Image (cartoon, rainbow, N blue to C red):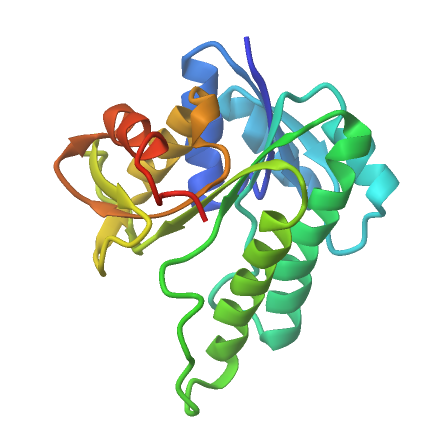
Length: 224
């Protein structure tokens, strides 16, 4: 049994991952920020832990992560949030988790980012401009953290049922991908130690998820 701590477990990808891990016999620790979400995580088969990453200390988060074999960071401030929360959640939450993992004895860290977050932002992007900046900066910090990291950058996320097939590469070109398939991809990366040290984009494709991870893990130049 693998124990996985999921930060952002109540989100659309997080809840799918909790359910998937529980179904295959792994233990999911869901870090959530509201008390009512703890019971929801239990209904999915995980163990909910109440902790707000916007106000928690490194020590508090490290305590919540202790006993985990890996951390998955899939938290986000959401589409309706302003620039400040995008910075405190998408960037600040990730940095906090990166700092808390080593004292908790956790080296494996998988982060959900976004396709194109390193690209220049149009001047008229408004509040949304804070999102790619926060994600790009969080990814940069993770790459230099010394952790066994994998960064996944999905295209446009959908609620379509899992196809079980994806395109996975350092650069895939634009496209969409279901949240179910992203959850399966996270699980496949957890199963593949060689996926550490890689940053990949993902969209719909024709390769079975586990096969795509295996092939890309041994592809020269796929690591960032």
